[in-house]
Length: 327
Image 1 (cartoon, rainbow, N blue to C red):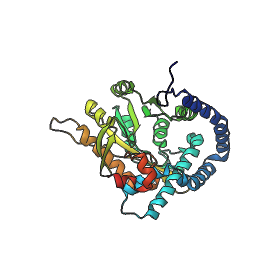
Image 2 (image 1 turned 180 degrees about the horizontal axis):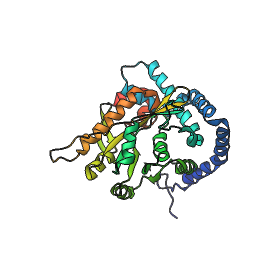
Image 3 (image 1 turned 90 degrees about the horizontal axis):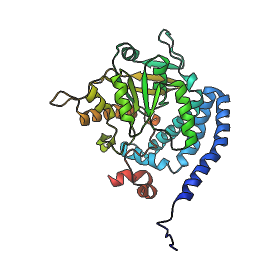
Image 4 (image 1 turned 180 degrees about the vertical axis):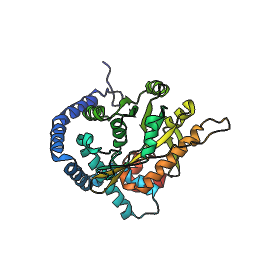
């Protein structure tokens, strides 16, 4: 009989426990979502922000945010960075509790002179994409309620394919997929074959919307807040291959549960000596734009993501000083 050592022992138990845990979260999450739905968009957003602001900073994952903030804003005091962190959790709690009401949040109409819940800046750029008959790439970031730009496109009839990465939790993935399917355009999950579908969509005159502010292990290392980090190059690569327009879109959270969507003018990405888009310089230009957005509203970005790849052991030992120590 062959005995299995600790290192060679199969890990079936862990996967089963994970599936069991996911199954157990279904009734609890379903009941919570029903409560959030009954609260309505305003009360749900306020409650989500208040709860997350109180609990979130105490969770271990907040050390990732502290490390990121210490690296990005070394000139700020610990108290100032903690205040930003509380705002990050407030925004995340609000965004999560706004999901069941996503179809109600976007109420912008171009003919209204007085904005309601949502106002839009750069509406002419949006209309250009709607009417010029050309494909385009639209990038955004995890700012405020980052789902609203895609909701806006679908509401106004802009043909768009949304590239997304589903949550690891199956229940959460199914729920998010159902919400997005009812409020957005065509959804395309990140996978090895996704690039083929993306290219086909662009060739057919479609528009591609994607979030490009998270760490992308297979990406190109370009500066972000002054430090090279693996970055998604899809925007620059598609612009190079198809010579299609590139736009940026962001969501800004305003007081009283309101939002501003901003669509940039067409972005001219740097070109090489051959006249084609330079992928590295183009990706760096996109990072510069997103960095500017984040610096303007740092409390509205998802700092909880390990964007610069801080070492987990350093995070446990040094907390918010991890990236500074490793840099």
